[in-house]
Every structure is written in C-alpha cells, then in structure tokens.
Length: 411
Image: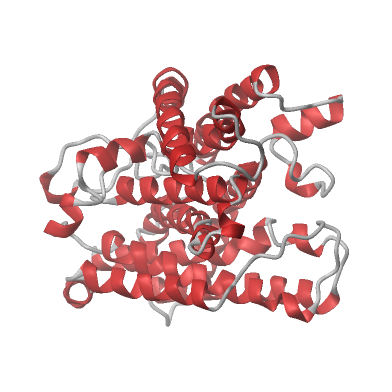
C-alpha cells in the first residue's frame, strides 16, 4: 500500500509560477518596508499589501498536501504512511532553514544569545513566545504555522474519514466540503474570540494555526473539488466551463487586491502584547480578503484539466517554473540580504531606492536559493524518497516534466 504523498513528481501547469509570484511579492513587501518606500511613496499601500503572498502559500499548502489524503478518503483506503509524510516535511523544511539561519548568525549579524533562544529558533517554535517572535529569521513565523499544519493534517484526515464513513446518506465529497467549511468557520471563530476577549497573547495567537487555518481549509476545499472532477464527469464538465477563462478570474483577483489597497486594510504595527481594540477589525477583514484573493488566483489553475495558452506563456513559462522551484530558498535568504544591500550602497535603515534594492536582493537571493536547492533541498528530498513508493496525480497535458515538492515557498 503506497504511503501518503503530496503531488511530488506530478505537474499541475502554472503552480510553480504561482509560487514564484507569491515569493517575489513577499520580497517586494519587505524591501518596501525596510527602505521606507511603504511609508513615503504613493504606491506604498500596494507594497504593504504584498504580504498577500503568504495567503497564497497557505492555500497552496492546503491544496497540494491535502489532495492525497482526500483521494484516500474518497477511495475508501486506509490513511497510512503518516510517518513518511512527516519525515518528508521535516527534511523539506529544516535542513535548508538551518543552513540559512546559521549563515545569518555567523555572517549577517543575527543574534542568538542563549541555549533557550537556540532551541526556539532552530526548532521553529518562536511564534509561541511573543518575546522572541521577531528575532532570528523574522519571516519564519509562517514556517512555524506550516509545521503545525503538517502535524495535524493526518489527524484531520483520519477524523474526516471516520465521519465520512458514518454519514451514509451524504456524498463523501460533499461531506468533505462541509468539513472544510467547518474548519474555515472554526478559524474565523478563533480570531473573533481574540477580538472579543482581548487576551494578552491575542496578537501572536492570530499567527498560530487556529488563526490561519481558514486559509489552509480553502486549499483543502479546492482539493476536494478537484478530486470530484476526477470522479464525476458531469461535474467536471461544469467546472471546466467555469474555469475556462483564467483571465476573468485574475481580473477578479486584481479587483480584490485593489479593494484591500483602497480600503486601507493595513496591519497595525504595535507591540505583540498590546490588547486588541475594535478599531483593529481591519485586520480581520484583511484576512478574509486575502483568502478570497488566493482562491481566485489559484482556482483556475488547480481545477483545470488542461492548461490554457495564457497560463502557459505566463505562469507556465520556463523562467517562472525555475523561479518557483527555488522559491523556498528565496524566502529563506531575501530578508537578511536587504540590510546588506543597503549597506553596500551607503544607505541606512528606511533609506534607499526601492527598485535598486529590490533588483539586487531578488538577484542575490535567487542565486543563493539555486545553490541551496541544488546542494541541500534536492538531496534531502532524495533521502526522504529512498525506499518509498509514490502516489502521484496524472500528468497534465501529457507533460513529463518533474516538479519539486509542491510546498516550496513561505513568507
């Protein structure tokens, strides 16, 4: 019996390009803040919203990693191979992260001053200590949340399989969609509770898995819909008609993004322990809008059976695929390179030309990411694959191109 696997070696046309877009949106977001462009430029509100790439990563994780579990549930097969799933996740995330964090400590001025900090930062649990949240690798909070999702995903699948087996009068895929809606609402309730009860840990708790599970559940919902298209031809025909023109979906995506900018849905920059006030509800609205943005962006790619020409020449182009392949390394390296680039040009913090710094950071982080992928990420994934069997979705459009592990990019 094959073990649980993500869509490894299978290729959904355009997914790599989405990862590249999301990764470099995050790079632009951080460069904009660190150069002061976000606060002093007319297009600063756009740069401020580009952390929307995080939502794209989380939805992609739910879709790509949830799909094999959903397939097993619908095929009424046991959910085994969980240990190998976790091993692959650990080897996918930690070795490259450890390398970059160590380089940051040795060469880039990052400070780790105690054994406790060492364990917290190298263990990727800093989101559970508000005092250390923004130390080490600042952007790594998303990795902490991703790891929590990896830890609980098999248990979500086991629970879903149990419930599907008991709900004989409801279609299994319908029951799974209802489960995704439940997870979304539960996450929304968690965030509402943080606003309603004003706990001292409320702001950091929004970064914990319960506060971000709505985004992962949206990806799980897309995975359920895709699985149904593979089992119900009539439903598949309706879906294919619905996603026939990705350009229309992306126009809607642009409208959602424009709304977040025009409405000024800014994330307040305050101390982590600062209690919430009702004026902070813009962040709540922002989370909902970001989730909608990610679904509209991903759905026409995730649900299409064959790629369209627009996707092929944009997100599916060779440069975008290659950038998507190394996007995890770009995520790891870019933030620590920004102050170095500013220093090289004689600029201080909140100084510098955005476009110069962005180009330099993007180029350097891509080069380092390629080396990291070649010498760390790929060998680790081969190690995880040793002796394992594979469970993959069919190739799209007859493509026989290998794809790296799908979950390759975080904020």
